[in-house]
Length: 312
Length: 281
Image 1 (spheres, rainbow over the protein chains, first blue to last red):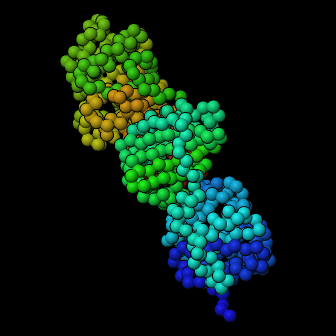
Image 2: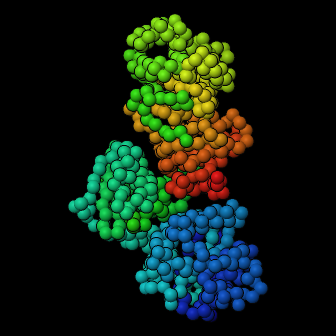
Image 3: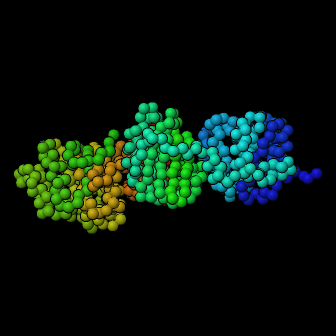
């Protein structure tokens, strides 16, 4: 029988991202305990952030070794929206990276079971790109009993590694982040006939115009809409002399579309990439995406159109 | 609180008002100072016009009602910049503001209701970056002092100075008329703290950075920047504030931002500027 190799070929120098799907406590123990024990034996910080059930069975099995874990925390209180959660996580990662050559993480994003938590899959997808150089192994636990089929489908498409029973292996269902994002963003329907459409050359004019139409129950979202749109317009006007701003409501959703005839977006995933260290690096798309409830991108070499969706 | 205003006309002004005004040519200059000083005449204020030369100034005032009577009585005075600023010593901001304080007292003593100054500071803004920095410090100090005196000030600048010079100066005035540019925001020196007011976006970020760093760098220690009246900040504006924190930090000044509105905080937190830096009042 082949011995279990909890991190396979991973050399501790780059990001490894595995989805482990389980349905019983024993499956959790069989996967996580050797993973944690190997990390402790190698002197790597081992962090565990998981739901109550997983924490309980791990604590019982690990006994006193639980105290050797660098973190043993509840996942239930972590969720603060996709962007808020990733931003906080990102800060923790940077702190770790500054002090630790390599580490390993066991994470159970329990919020995927909730409707508002499902957007997390998009961040999981983009993490494969933006954390590629982060030296840690992220073992993500997903409970088949609690998560609906659509979420489990997104899980296997956003993690490059899966568990063979003996070692991590390439996941056949894994997709490139951009392809995954395109598949889950709102469908790109034609603009409705009642859309307002403006040509914009200065973001400040668009701010005034937008603020003036944010009435009748939309006032509470006005600041978010105006700032998010301003950032998209600022980006568009960097690559084009003018931008088009379209704006419509669809029942309880307000849609803003900013389009330009520039060369297309170099990276469609930027709305899910947390701000870089230091003052340089773009943040406009991250901010716009975080202020909106949803976003969709249509980008080609002849131009870019971005839609932001805001719910009342 | 001093509201930020975009002025279409240099009138409707009262003590404490501090106006930035650009002009294109002598006729435009005249068109600004005439209604401004005439309003002061009707309010029985002491009037003072400062500019390049007395001759040119008197010419600009040719059609001011009662010009000669006011010159004779001393209610109106014209001065050249060289009479007010010794080029060898520079602007001496503190001294200059103090001299206005005593001129206001003298005007009140003579029975006037206050002092109204119009000053063409183009010559001061034209010099090097060191002099411009001093001018920024002066404008901030003047703004702070004006609020407490029976003093109205119209600071005039030739529009040919260009945006790079003019925009930081405009930002240091709560009342602005900058050609066709829309007034967005100002850096105010009134009250216990420096404050940013209005809107600071990508189009104003460079100007605010220059003004802010110049006026805050003089005092080592902590400088508080009140953001309570800042209604809009974008990513470029927040990046600018991060730069200001870094640049000031290099000269021993700790810039601390307080009382940011929710939406402003969203941009600040992208640069880790918001956490733990809000004080409640």
